[in-house]
Each structure stands twice: as structure tokens, then as C-alpha cells.
Length: 174
Image (cartoon, rainbow, N blue to C red; front, top):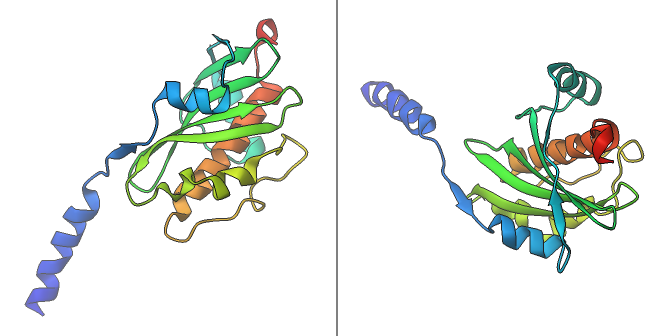
């Protein structure tokens, strides 16, 4: 009985230790993987509190930041840098969107070691061509056993990025 009592505090302390992200790619390397030899112009903007609330309610996805980091290519394609929560970490990733509003690619830049299966091409490639309003996305992208939260949260994040791209871009940057 005494050993069980002592194990509970140890388990709680162990669960409270944050996981540190493993840097898989730099922003530059991720950008080059999605937009080789393409000049991108930075077009950052901030979502209003009302827009954030609407995204959360209407699309049923979390929004971690009001600030949107984005770049536009001369050919009309876009690149977004976003973050979502993993299990005990923050996952940083890029979403490239083609001229028609479909996902051109996803690159994971930072995730926690041991849960980086979401950075593997077979999983990321499930997003290719997915579009806001045309695809459900959630439920269409397979989870990864052992990395379920990372997979679910990135899927929600891509859904959010597609919604932001389709409905919340400031009029002066379209």
C-alpha cells in the first residue's frame, strides 16, 4: 500500500515536465521544400477577436494566435506558418496553398521527439489538394498510433489555415 501512495506523486511530477521540441527544419529549409526558387513577400496580419471567435465556433478548431504569419508568391500561391499544441509541446509547421486554394504541401518544423511521425511524407501527403469548404478534412486524414494528438491537432490547424485563407485574408492583400 505504501509503494502505491509514493508512486502517485512521482507520476504527477513526471507528467508535469514539459516536453521540448525537436527542430526538424528551419523556416528557410521548410520554405525551400515547398517553394523552391520562388520569391515570397511577407504579408502578416492579425485576426480580430470576433474573427477568432467565429473560427472557433463555425469551424470547430482552436486558434492559438491572433497573429497570422503569411507569405504570398507572385504566382498567387501562399505560405502560412502556424502552431498547434501537441501532447506537452507546441508543434510548428508550414502550410502551402496553391492558386486554387488547395493544400500544396505541409512541412513540420518543430515537434516533440518521439511524436514526429507527423513529419513523414506518407502522413503529410494526405493533405495534398484539400480545400476549404470542399473537403471535411477532419475525419479524412488518418491518425497515427502513438502520435494521435499531434496528428489530430495538425489536422485541425490545417483546417483553420484553409479557413483563414479562404475567408479572413485582409482585402488589401488578396
